[in-house]
Length: 473
Image 1 (cartoon, one colour):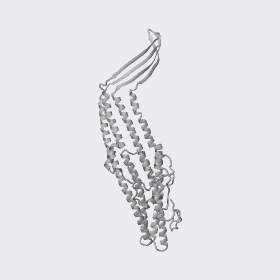
Image 2: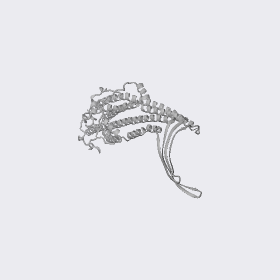
Image 3: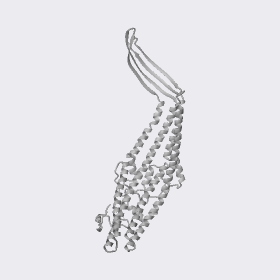
Image 4: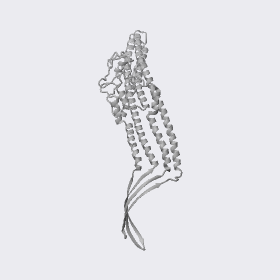
Protein backbone atom coordinates (compact mmCIF):
# COMPACT_ATOMS: atom_id res chain seq x y z
CA UNK A 1 0.00 0.00 0.00
CA UNK A 2 1.46 3.32 -1.07
CA UNK A 3 -0.41 6.00 0.87
CA UNK A 4 0.22 8.04 3.99
CA UNK A 5 -1.69 10.11 6.55
CA UNK A 6 -3.30 13.43 5.66
CA UNK A 7 -6.31 14.34 7.77
CA UNK A 8 -5.75 17.75 9.32
CA UNK A 9 -8.58 19.32 7.32
CA UNK A 10 -11.38 17.76 9.34
CA UNK A 11 -13.20 19.96 11.82
CA UNK A 12 -14.44 19.29 15.31
CA UNK A 13 -17.98 18.47 14.15
CA UNK A 14 -16.67 15.70 11.91
CA UNK A 15 -14.63 14.28 14.78
CA UNK A 16 -17.64 14.25 17.06
CA UNK A 17 -19.69 12.60 14.36
CA UNK A 18 -17.19 9.75 14.11
CA UNK A 19 -17.05 9.33 17.86
CA UNK A 20 -20.79 8.88 17.85
CA UNK A 21 -20.39 6.04 15.35
CA UNK A 22 -17.53 4.22 17.10
CA UNK A 23 -18.03 0.64 18.22
CA UNK A 24 -17.85 -0.94 21.68
CA UNK A 25 -14.64 -2.45 23.01
CA UNK A 26 -13.53 -5.94 21.99
CA UNK A 27 -14.50 -5.29 18.37
CA UNK A 28 -13.23 -7.72 15.75
CA UNK A 29 -11.16 -5.84 13.20
CA UNK A 30 -10.58 -6.36 9.50
CA UNK A 31 -7.53 -8.55 10.05
CA UNK A 32 -9.47 -10.88 12.37
CA UNK A 33 -12.25 -11.21 9.82
CA UNK A 34 -9.75 -11.84 7.02
CA UNK A 35 -8.07 -14.64 8.97
CA UNK A 36 -11.46 -16.24 9.54
CA UNK A 37 -12.18 -15.94 5.83
CA UNK A 38 -8.91 -17.64 4.89
CA UNK A 39 -9.89 -20.61 7.04
CA UNK A 40 -13.59 -20.77 6.20
CA UNK A 41 -14.42 -19.22 2.84
CA UNK A 42 -15.67 -22.00 0.57
CA UNK A 43 -14.55 -20.34 -2.68
CA UNK A 44 -10.99 -19.85 -1.44
CA UNK A 45 -10.85 -23.37 -0.04
CA UNK A 46 -11.95 -24.68 -3.44
CA UNK A 47 -9.21 -22.63 -5.11
CA UNK A 48 -6.68 -24.04 -2.65
CA UNK A 49 -7.80 -27.58 -3.44
CA UNK A 50 -7.58 -26.89 -7.20
CA UNK A 51 -4.04 -25.65 -6.74
CA UNK A 52 -3.01 -28.72 -4.77
CA UNK A 53 -4.51 -30.92 -7.47
CA UNK A 54 -2.75 -28.98 -10.25
CA UNK A 55 0.63 -29.52 -8.57
CA UNK A 56 0.41 -33.21 -9.55
CA UNK A 57 0.55 -32.31 -13.26
CA UNK A 58 4.36 -32.07 -13.28
CA UNK A 59 5.18 -35.39 -11.56
CA UNK A 60 2.49 -37.06 -13.67
CA UNK A 61 4.09 -35.84 -16.90
CA UNK A 62 7.55 -36.83 -15.72
CA UNK A 63 6.33 -40.31 -14.84
CA UNK A 64 6.12 -41.04 -18.60
CA UNK A 65 9.93 -41.26 -18.62
CA UNK A 66 10.13 -43.56 -15.65
CA UNK A 67 10.15 -47.38 -15.98
CA UNK A 68 6.81 -49.14 -16.17
CA UNK A 69 7.04 -52.60 -14.60
CA UNK A 70 4.27 -55.15 -15.11
CA UNK A 71 3.89 -58.68 -13.80
CA UNK A 72 2.04 -61.25 -15.92
CA UNK A 73 1.01 -64.81 -15.29
CA UNK A 74 -1.13 -67.49 -16.93
CA UNK A 75 -2.55 -70.74 -15.66
CA UNK A 76 -4.06 -73.02 -18.27
CA UNK A 77 -4.74 -76.60 -19.37
CA UNK A 78 -4.51 -77.85 -22.95
CA UNK A 79 -6.19 -80.95 -24.46
CA UNK A 80 -4.73 -82.27 -27.72
CA UNK A 81 -6.13 -84.95 -29.99
CA UNK A 82 -3.23 -86.81 -31.62
CA UNK A 83 -3.98 -90.05 -33.60
CA UNK A 84 -7.19 -90.59 -31.70
CA UNK A 85 -5.53 -90.31 -28.34
CA UNK A 86 -6.31 -87.36 -26.08
CA UNK A 87 -3.32 -85.76 -24.38
CA UNK A 88 -3.87 -83.27 -21.58
CA UNK A 89 -1.12 -81.05 -20.20
CA UNK A 90 -0.70 -77.88 -18.14
CA UNK A 91 0.40 -74.62 -19.71
CA UNK A 92 1.43 -72.02 -17.09
CA UNK A 93 3.79 -69.08 -17.07
CA UNK A 94 4.80 -66.20 -14.85
CA UNK A 95 6.92 -63.24 -15.78
CA UNK A 96 7.82 -59.62 -15.28
CA UNK A 97 8.29 -56.98 -17.94
CA UNK A 98 9.84 -53.51 -17.96
CA UNK A 99 9.24 -50.74 -20.48
CA UNK A 100 10.96 -47.38 -20.35
CA UNK A 101 10.54 -44.48 -22.74
CA UNK A 102 13.99 -43.22 -23.70
CA UNK A 103 13.12 -40.57 -26.24
CA UNK A 104 9.83 -38.93 -27.16
CA UNK A 105 9.97 -35.27 -28.10
CA UNK A 106 6.22 -34.77 -27.79
CA UNK A 107 6.19 -36.18 -24.27
CA UNK A 108 9.20 -34.07 -23.31
CA UNK A 109 7.35 -30.95 -24.45
CA UNK A 110 4.43 -32.12 -22.34
CA UNK A 111 6.69 -31.96 -19.29
CA UNK A 112 7.54 -28.35 -20.10
CA UNK A 113 3.85 -27.60 -20.47
CA UNK A 114 3.13 -29.18 -17.10
CA UNK A 115 5.68 -26.89 -15.44
CA UNK A 116 3.88 -23.87 -16.88
CA UNK A 117 0.52 -25.28 -15.81
CA UNK A 118 1.72 -25.59 -12.22
CA UNK A 119 2.98 -21.98 -12.35
CA UNK A 120 -0.38 -20.88 -13.71
CA UNK A 121 -2.18 -22.75 -10.95
CA UNK A 122 -0.15 -20.76 -8.42
CA UNK A 123 -1.16 -17.53 -10.15
CA UNK A 124 -4.80 -18.62 -10.07
CA UNK A 125 -4.52 -19.23 -6.33
CA UNK A 126 -3.07 -15.71 -5.93
CA UNK A 127 -6.01 -14.37 -7.93
CA UNK A 128 -8.41 -16.20 -5.61
CA UNK A 129 -6.62 -14.75 -2.59
CA UNK A 130 -6.86 -11.22 -4.02
CA UNK A 131 -10.53 -11.81 -4.69
CA UNK A 132 -10.95 -12.88 -1.07
CA UNK A 133 -9.20 -9.74 0.18
CA UNK A 134 -11.57 -7.57 -1.82
CA UNK A 135 -14.69 -9.55 -0.93
CA UNK A 136 -13.85 -9.41 2.77
CA UNK A 137 -13.05 -5.69 2.65
CA UNK A 138 -16.12 -4.78 0.63
CA UNK A 139 -18.48 -6.74 2.84
CA UNK A 140 -16.80 -5.50 6.01
CA UNK A 141 -17.14 -1.86 5.01
CA UNK A 142 -20.60 -2.40 3.55
CA UNK A 143 -21.65 -3.54 7.00
CA UNK A 144 -20.05 -0.49 8.59
CA UNK A 145 -21.83 1.72 6.05
CA UNK A 146 -25.16 0.06 6.87
CA UNK A 147 -24.61 0.68 10.57
CA UNK A 148 -23.66 4.28 9.85
CA UNK A 149 -26.81 4.76 7.80
CA UNK A 150 -28.90 3.45 10.68
CA UNK A 151 -27.22 5.78 13.15
CA UNK A 152 -27.83 8.75 10.88
CA UNK A 153 -31.46 7.64 10.42
CA UNK A 154 -31.83 7.33 14.20
CA UNK A 155 -30.54 10.85 14.75
CA UNK A 156 -32.73 12.13 11.95
CA UNK A 157 -35.75 10.55 13.60
CA UNK A 158 -34.94 12.24 16.91
CA UNK A 159 -34.59 15.59 15.16
CA UNK A 160 -37.88 15.14 13.33
CA UNK A 161 -39.56 14.10 16.58
CA UNK A 162 -38.42 17.35 18.11
CA UNK A 163 -39.73 19.35 15.15
CA UNK A 164 -43.06 17.55 15.49
CA UNK A 165 -43.19 18.62 19.10
CA UNK A 166 -42.44 22.20 18.17
CA UNK A 167 -44.97 22.19 15.33
CA UNK A 168 -47.63 20.81 17.66
CA UNK A 169 -46.84 23.38 20.36
CA UNK A 170 -46.95 26.26 17.88
CA UNK A 171 -50.24 24.97 16.47
CA UNK A 172 -51.71 24.81 19.96
CA UNK A 173 -50.89 28.47 20.60
CA UNK A 174 -51.98 29.61 17.14
CA UNK A 175 -48.49 30.35 15.75
CA UNK A 176 -48.11 27.32 13.53
CA UNK A 177 -50.06 25.68 10.72
CA UNK A 178 -51.48 22.23 10.27
CA UNK A 179 -49.38 21.95 7.14
CA UNK A 180 -46.20 22.13 9.23
CA UNK A 181 -47.51 19.46 11.55
CA UNK A 182 -48.65 17.16 8.75
CA UNK A 183 -45.34 17.52 6.94
CA UNK A 184 -43.40 16.74 10.14
CA UNK A 185 -45.65 13.75 10.79
CA UNK A 186 -45.08 12.42 7.24
CA UNK A 187 -41.34 12.77 7.62
CA UNK A 188 -41.45 11.08 10.99
CA UNK A 189 -43.17 8.07 9.43
CA UNK A 190 -40.58 8.10 6.66
CA UNK A 191 -37.86 8.12 9.32
CA UNK A 192 -39.52 5.07 10.89
CA UNK A 193 -39.44 3.35 7.51
CA UNK A 194 -35.81 4.37 7.00
CA UNK A 195 -34.88 2.78 10.33
CA UNK A 196 -36.63 -0.45 9.36
CA UNK A 197 -34.83 -0.44 6.01
CA UNK A 198 -31.55 0.26 7.81
CA UNK A 199 -32.10 -2.75 10.09
CA UNK A 200 -32.76 -4.94 7.07
CA UNK A 201 -29.62 -3.66 5.36
CA UNK A 202 -27.56 -4.29 8.50
CA UNK A 203 -28.82 -7.87 8.67
CA UNK A 204 -28.19 -8.42 4.97
CA UNK A 205 -24.65 -7.05 5.06
CA UNK A 206 -23.87 -9.03 8.20
CA UNK A 207 -25.16 -12.21 6.56
CA UNK A 208 -22.98 -11.49 3.52
CA UNK A 209 -19.98 -11.28 5.85
CA UNK A 210 -20.98 -14.46 7.69
CA UNK A 211 -21.19 -16.23 4.32
CA UNK A 212 -17.43 -15.76 3.98
CA UNK A 213 -16.21 -16.30 7.55
CA UNK A 214 -18.86 -18.86 8.63
CA UNK A 215 -19.11 -17.38 12.14
CA UNK A 216 -21.13 -14.57 13.67
CA UNK A 217 -18.79 -11.74 14.77
CA UNK A 218 -19.65 -10.21 18.12
CA UNK A 219 -18.78 -6.68 17.06
CA UNK A 220 -17.01 -4.98 14.17
CA UNK A 221 -14.30 -2.35 14.64
CA UNK A 222 -15.15 0.99 13.04
CA UNK A 223 -12.99 3.27 10.92
CA UNK A 224 -11.07 5.89 12.86
CA UNK A 225 -11.95 9.53 12.39
CA UNK A 226 -8.39 10.42 11.36
CA UNK A 227 -7.88 7.68 8.77
CA UNK A 228 -5.63 8.94 5.94
CA UNK A 229 -6.74 10.42 2.64
CA UNK A 230 -3.58 10.49 0.56
CA UNK A 231 -3.21 9.98 -3.20
CA UNK A 232 -1.25 7.02 -4.60
CA UNK A 233 2.51 7.36 -4.57
CA UNK A 234 3.66 8.18 -7.18
CA UNK A 235 0.63 10.22 -8.21
CA UNK A 236 1.12 9.35 -11.87
CA UNK A 237 -1.44 7.24 -13.67
CA UNK A 238 1.03 6.14 -16.38
CA UNK A 239 3.24 4.55 -13.72
CA UNK A 240 0.35 2.47 -12.40
CA UNK A 241 -0.89 1.49 -15.86
CA UNK A 242 2.61 0.33 -16.79
CA UNK A 243 2.74 -1.84 -13.67
CA UNK A 244 -0.66 -3.32 -14.43
CA UNK A 245 0.18 -4.28 -18.02
CA UNK A 246 3.16 -6.31 -16.81
CA UNK A 247 2.29 -7.39 -13.25
CA UNK A 248 -1.48 -7.81 -13.24
CA UNK A 249 -2.16 -11.40 -12.13
CA UNK A 250 -4.68 -12.07 -14.87
CA UNK A 251 -2.17 -10.81 -17.43
CA UNK A 252 0.47 -13.13 -15.97
CA UNK A 253 -1.96 -16.03 -16.13
CA UNK A 254 -2.87 -15.38 -19.76
CA UNK A 255 0.81 -14.99 -20.64
CA UNK A 256 1.46 -18.45 -19.20
CA UNK A 257 -1.51 -19.78 -21.19
CA UNK A 258 0.04 -18.28 -24.32
CA UNK A 259 3.33 -20.06 -23.62
CA UNK A 260 1.46 -23.32 -23.08
CA UNK A 261 -0.40 -22.81 -26.38
CA UNK A 262 2.90 -22.15 -28.18
CA UNK A 263 4.36 -25.35 -26.79
CA UNK A 264 1.23 -27.21 -27.82
CA UNK A 265 1.96 -26.29 -31.43
CA UNK A 266 5.46 -27.77 -31.03
CA UNK A 267 4.05 -30.86 -29.30
CA UNK A 268 1.64 -31.61 -32.10
CA UNK A 269 4.32 -31.03 -34.70
CA UNK A 270 6.58 -33.42 -32.75
CA UNK A 271 4.16 -36.20 -33.62
CA UNK A 272 6.39 -36.79 -36.66
CA UNK A 273 9.43 -37.43 -34.47
CA UNK A 274 10.63 -40.96 -33.70
CA UNK A 275 10.25 -42.54 -30.28
CA UNK A 276 12.69 -44.93 -28.64
CA UNK A 277 11.62 -47.40 -25.95
CA UNK A 278 13.65 -49.86 -23.87
CA UNK A 279 12.00 -53.16 -23.06
CA UNK A 280 13.10 -56.01 -20.81
CA UNK A 281 11.35 -59.19 -19.67
CA UNK A 282 11.93 -62.27 -17.54
CA UNK A 283 9.52 -65.22 -17.54
CA UNK A 284 9.19 -68.79 -16.38
CA UNK A 285 7.10 -71.20 -18.48
CA UNK A 286 5.81 -74.56 -17.23
CA UNK A 287 4.40 -76.85 -19.94
CA UNK A 288 3.57 -79.82 -17.78
CA UNK A 289 2.68 -82.93 -19.71
CA UNK A 290 4.37 -85.89 -21.30
CA UNK A 291 7.51 -83.94 -22.08
CA UNK A 292 7.40 -81.94 -18.84
CA UNK A 293 8.91 -79.00 -20.73
CA UNK A 294 9.76 -76.07 -18.40
CA UNK A 295 12.09 -73.20 -19.18
CA UNK A 296 13.13 -69.60 -18.32
CA UNK A 297 13.06 -66.80 -20.86
CA UNK A 298 14.93 -63.47 -20.71
CA UNK A 299 14.73 -60.68 -23.25
CA UNK A 300 16.00 -57.14 -23.76
CA UNK A 301 15.04 -54.95 -26.70
CA UNK A 302 15.05 -51.43 -28.06
CA UNK A 303 11.99 -50.37 -30.02
CA UNK A 304 12.14 -47.54 -32.53
CA UNK A 305 8.88 -46.12 -33.82
CA UNK A 306 8.96 -43.71 -36.75
CA UNK A 307 5.59 -42.32 -37.87
CA UNK A 308 5.38 -42.19 -41.65
CA UNK A 309 1.76 -41.40 -42.36
CA UNK A 310 -1.10 -41.15 -39.89
CA UNK A 311 -3.91 -40.07 -42.16
CA UNK A 312 -2.95 -36.39 -42.03
CA UNK A 313 -3.85 -36.09 -38.33
CA UNK A 314 -0.52 -34.50 -37.39
CA UNK A 315 -0.96 -31.62 -39.84
CA UNK A 316 -4.56 -31.10 -38.77
CA UNK A 317 -3.75 -31.10 -35.06
CA UNK A 318 -0.82 -28.74 -35.62
CA UNK A 319 -3.08 -26.28 -37.47
CA UNK A 320 -5.69 -26.59 -34.72
CA UNK A 321 -3.07 -25.85 -32.06
CA UNK A 322 -1.94 -22.84 -34.12
CA UNK A 323 -5.48 -21.44 -34.13
CA UNK A 324 -5.67 -21.86 -30.38
CA UNK A 325 -2.33 -20.07 -30.04
CA UNK A 326 -3.79 -17.14 -32.00
CA UNK A 327 -6.81 -17.14 -29.67
CA UNK A 328 -4.50 -17.14 -26.63
CA UNK A 329 -2.70 -14.08 -28.05
CA UNK A 330 -6.00 -12.21 -28.28
CA UNK A 331 -7.03 -13.24 -24.76
CA UNK A 332 -3.70 -11.94 -23.45
CA UNK A 333 -4.22 -8.63 -25.22
CA UNK A 334 -7.75 -8.42 -23.79
CA UNK A 335 -6.34 -9.05 -20.31
CA UNK A 336 -3.82 -6.23 -20.76
CA UNK A 337 -6.56 -3.87 -21.88
CA UNK A 338 -8.75 -4.90 -18.97
CA UNK A 339 -5.85 -4.32 -16.60
CA UNK A 340 -5.39 -0.85 -18.08
CA UNK A 341 -9.08 -0.07 -17.64
CA UNK A 342 -9.23 -1.43 -14.09
CA UNK A 343 -6.11 0.49 -13.08
CA UNK A 344 -7.33 3.73 -14.61
CA UNK A 345 -10.72 3.38 -12.95
CA UNK A 346 -9.22 2.55 -9.56
CA UNK A 347 -6.64 5.34 -9.76
CA UNK A 348 -9.28 7.94 -10.62
CA UNK A 349 -11.56 6.55 -7.91
CA UNK A 350 -8.80 7.08 -5.35
CA UNK A 351 -7.90 10.60 -6.45
CA UNK A 352 -11.49 11.75 -6.98
CA UNK A 353 -12.55 9.97 -3.80
CA UNK A 354 -10.23 12.19 -1.78
CA UNK A 355 -11.85 15.30 -3.22
CA UNK A 356 -15.29 13.84 -2.68
CA UNK A 357 -14.65 13.06 0.99
CA UNK A 358 -13.25 16.53 1.58
CA UNK A 359 -16.17 18.16 -0.20
CA UNK A 360 -18.70 16.12 1.75
CA UNK A 361 -16.95 17.00 5.00
CA UNK A 362 -17.32 20.66 4.11
CA UNK A 363 -20.93 19.98 3.16
CA UNK A 364 -21.57 18.61 6.66
CA UNK A 365 -20.07 21.70 8.28
CA UNK A 366 -22.05 23.98 5.96
CA UNK A 367 -25.19 21.90 6.46
CA UNK A 368 -24.93 22.19 10.22
CA UNK A 369 -24.56 25.95 9.93
CA UNK A 370 -27.53 26.12 7.58
CA UNK A 371 -29.63 24.00 9.94
CA UNK A 372 -28.72 26.19 12.89
CA UNK A 373 -29.63 29.31 10.94
CA UNK A 374 -32.98 27.89 9.87
CA UNK A 375 -33.77 26.72 13.39
CA UNK A 376 -33.04 30.22 14.67
CA UNK A 377 -35.12 31.66 11.86
CA UNK A 378 -37.93 29.26 12.72
CA UNK A 379 -37.83 30.39 16.35
CA UNK A 380 -38.02 33.99 15.17
CA UNK A 381 -40.85 33.25 12.75
CA UNK A 382 -38.72 33.97 9.65
CA UNK A 383 -38.62 30.38 8.29
CA UNK A 384 -41.07 27.52 8.31
CA UNK A 385 -40.91 24.13 9.91
CA UNK A 386 -40.57 22.63 6.43
CA UNK A 387 -37.41 24.65 5.88
CA UNK A 388 -35.92 23.18 9.05
CA UNK A 389 -36.92 19.64 8.08
CA UNK A 390 -35.41 20.10 4.62
CA UNK A 391 -32.15 21.25 6.19
CA UNK A 392 -32.14 18.24 8.49
CA UNK A 393 -32.74 15.93 5.54
CA UNK A 394 -29.94 17.48 3.49
CA UNK A 395 -27.55 17.24 6.43
CA UNK A 396 -28.36 13.58 6.95
CA UNK A 397 -27.73 12.84 3.27
CA UNK A 398 -24.36 14.58 3.47
CA UNK A 399 -23.41 12.53 6.51
CA UNK A 400 -24.36 9.21 4.89
CA UNK A 401 -22.58 10.14 1.65
CA UNK A 402 -19.49 11.28 3.55
CA UNK A 403 -19.16 8.02 5.47
CA UNK A 404 -19.82 5.93 2.37
CA UNK A 405 -17.22 7.93 0.41
CA UNK A 406 -14.54 7.14 3.00
CA UNK A 407 -15.18 3.42 2.63
CA UNK A 408 -15.22 3.72 -1.17
CA UNK A 409 -11.82 5.40 -1.01
CA UNK A 410 -10.39 2.42 0.88
CA UNK A 411 -11.90 -0.09 -1.53
CA UNK A 412 -10.52 1.89 -4.47
CA UNK A 413 -7.04 1.71 -2.92
CA UNK A 414 -7.30 -2.06 -2.67
CA UNK A 415 -8.62 -2.31 -6.23
CA UNK A 416 -5.64 -0.29 -7.45
CA UNK A 417 -3.27 -2.66 -5.67
CA UNK A 418 -5.11 -5.64 -7.17
CA UNK A 419 -4.99 -4.20 -10.69
CA UNK A 420 -1.21 -3.78 -10.47
CA UNK A 421 -0.64 -7.25 -8.99
CA UNK A 422 0.53 -5.88 -5.65
CA UNK A 423 -2.38 -6.75 -3.37
CA UNK A 424 -1.51 -8.88 -0.35
CA UNK A 425 -1.91 -9.50 3.35
CA UNK A 426 0.20 -6.44 4.13
CA UNK A 427 -2.52 -4.27 2.59
CA UNK A 428 -5.12 -5.71 4.96
CA UNK A 429 -2.77 -5.00 7.88
CA UNK A 430 -2.18 -1.48 6.56
CA UNK A 431 -5.92 -0.75 6.37
CA UNK A 432 -6.46 -2.47 9.71
CA UNK A 433 -4.31 0.18 11.39
CA UNK A 434 -6.98 2.72 10.46
CA UNK A 435 -9.63 1.00 12.57
CA UNK A 436 -10.58 1.78 16.15
CA UNK A 437 -8.25 -0.01 18.57
CA UNK A 438 -9.78 -2.67 20.78
CA UNK A 439 -8.83 -0.96 24.03
CA UNK A 440 -10.10 2.46 22.97
CA UNK A 441 -13.26 1.65 21.02
CA UNK A 442 -16.27 3.39 22.49
CA UNK A 443 -19.62 4.87 21.57
CA UNK A 444 -20.95 8.37 22.28
CA UNK A 445 -24.58 9.28 21.58
CA UNK A 446 -24.87 12.94 22.59
CA UNK A 447 -21.99 14.70 20.85
CA UNK A 448 -24.08 16.27 18.11
CA UNK A 449 -24.99 19.87 18.47
CA UNK A 450 -28.58 19.25 17.42
CA UNK A 451 -29.21 16.43 19.92
CA UNK A 452 -30.93 18.11 22.83
CA UNK A 453 -32.83 15.14 24.28
CA UNK A 454 -31.74 11.66 25.22
CA UNK A 455 -32.95 8.89 22.96
CA UNK A 456 -35.14 7.39 25.67
CA UNK A 457 -36.46 10.70 27.03
CA UNK A 458 -40.24 11.09 27.09
CA UNK A 459 -41.70 13.13 24.28
CA UNK A 460 -44.79 15.31 24.27
CA UNK A 461 -47.88 13.44 23.01
CA UNK A 462 -48.93 14.59 19.57
CA UNK A 463 -52.39 14.54 17.97
CA UNK A 464 -51.39 11.70 15.64
CA UNK A 465 -51.74 7.96 15.86
CA UNK A 466 -48.04 7.36 16.48
CA UNK A 467 -47.56 10.23 18.90
CA UNK A 468 -46.95 8.00 21.93
CA UNK A 469 -44.35 5.78 20.26
CA UNK A 470 -41.00 5.94 22.01
CA UNK A 471 -38.08 7.23 19.98
CA UNK A 472 -35.81 4.25 19.69
CA UNK A 473 -33.39 2.54 17.42
